[in-house]
Picture (cartoon, rainbow, N blue to C red):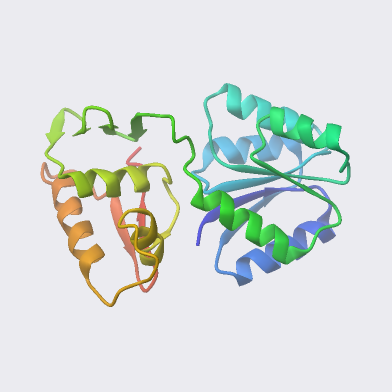
Length: 225
């Protein structure tokens, strides 16, 4: 489950996409113009953005280019009725991570979004920041504000996975697969134990909670502002 932003001016298409993705458990917001979509993208923490190529007010590719220029690396799927190779290349070069031509099957859209959500936002980044939380992956160190965090290797890997997806709900199955490299979900409280230890370290100085449990689903790391 993830927080998704849909930027699409066609109300019928938007309605179909919203109904389908919400039916799959995602929290989806909708903006109908380029400027409104750009504002929403900047104001929220999104797991992924779905943006139409042709939008009123500002072209979808311009929205993406501006976001990338500002350092936003949220995965983005470009939708367009322009499906030729040159247009696909244009969409990817503007900052899109994937490109889907209209008309499309809702199942394919959902599968592409799920693939984007599994992909690290920027695997080349070695110093991560979420609010006042900082992790240096090369040095293997972490800080919250002025306080150092003593992180074990598995805790560091777990925190890295969460920090690359701020605001996104991460399931236990995702953590077993990506952090523990299990290809099945064992009947174990292993993840809850590690998350509990990590949460205590993050809040050891009396700070506000960052790591939250989502009952029956998993966890989410929320920026502390």
